[in-house]
Length: 112
Length: 112
Image 1: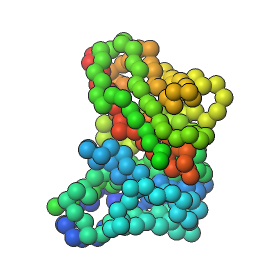
Image 2: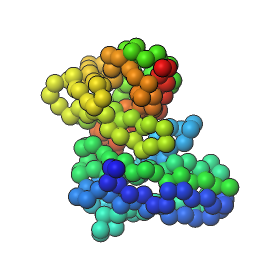
Image 3: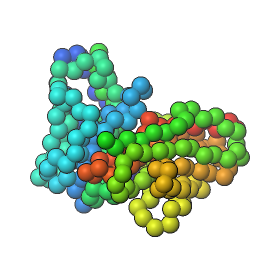
């Protein structure tokens, strides 16, 4: 167990809908990363937060947004969902940027 | 922009064979380097990391990696693989503004 908790584990939703994925980092970790893993794209970096502030942005679509709350948990919001958004979404946390990241079990999103 | 390239997409070995997985990155500044492993159906786990010092780093389960700065490489090695090493292996680089970028992954299949 890495100490990073992601909910829900599985999510099935229809195209056009909006979902929220939640991540609780390890105790003491200030940095949270979000990744999308699909068969054809590999592990794509979406966004990173550090102590509540956006730190770095990757290949995140405009339909997607994220935030990190004062208690350091983070949420990834995916809207206007398309079939191609079906993937495994991982959250990771680290003490600060540059140190090793610990991954959650992921949320498997299926858009039908 | 920072990127990571893993040379092999799928490697098939017999037990006791030696393993070397290639990883190259593009980023001219100071980097921290990682290898992660993802066993089937599980989350990513850290195998080893390099921050500074001795460029030959040892990780868990008999894995090691060598950082060659002049070649922008961080190859993963294991002298003798086991069936239980069957997994997907990801190289990652943390450099530009704290982004943790992963390579496409290498799927390793070890035949008993």
